[in-house]
Length: 313
Image (tube, rainbow, N blue to C red; front, side):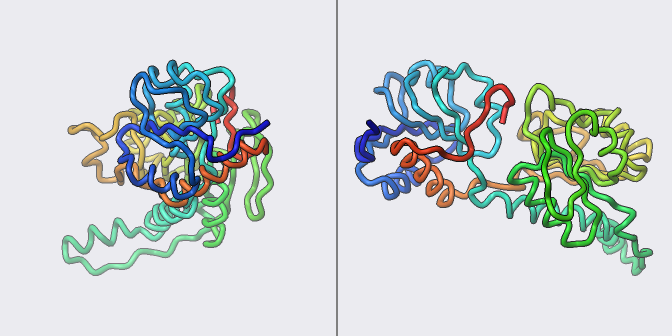
């Protein structure tokens, strides 16, 4: 028989995150629940709210019913040895999808309308026009059609670009030409000039943006990576830009973060970088979603966002 909500024990273990606002929000959303910050040797909890927890946490909290990850990506969490019967639950959206759609739309439009060129002109005092480009010449390929990818694809379609979408399993999205599985991956690349990466990071997707992938894109390609730095082979992107086949890139994620001083991306004239800020976790929305799911699990109900560790998402 499910425990009443007030009997829940919740532990918080989020590296680099200020705990107090989360504890206050969870306490308000789940009155009476026992909520505390994890310390080594702490009693067993029923549920955990985590971000980059240490392996010791997993070893000591082997009886957890569910882990709630406060970020969209669970790749770092799945590298740990997890309790075999513990559910891993990711955020469905919690305000991140609209942020991602804003970011990617801005990057696409900035490149398409050549605003970087106008900025360079402004710096030299040059008043000049550029020939308008055709949207039909800039088909956009979105890799990964989960909650974030679908929102991005739909947002870009509003600007009348041709939109391609690739995912591991079949997806049907209005206004998006769908490609599915490894057998259609190369066809998807060949149909795309702008490549947007929103894939989860798994062993199968690591290094997916490499010299072969980039070479299959249409000439004058543009790359936008907002998923994980390990998806991109840095040297291959730099070589593709230097060759002229890739016109440039907007990158929000990197193999090492912060991006090390002296890295070639810092001062490359055709690469725009941002500090992993394309879609930030919104605390209030996340707390509300996590609390709802904890309560549902306590009642024995199914919840969305359960991760399949074998797939990595």
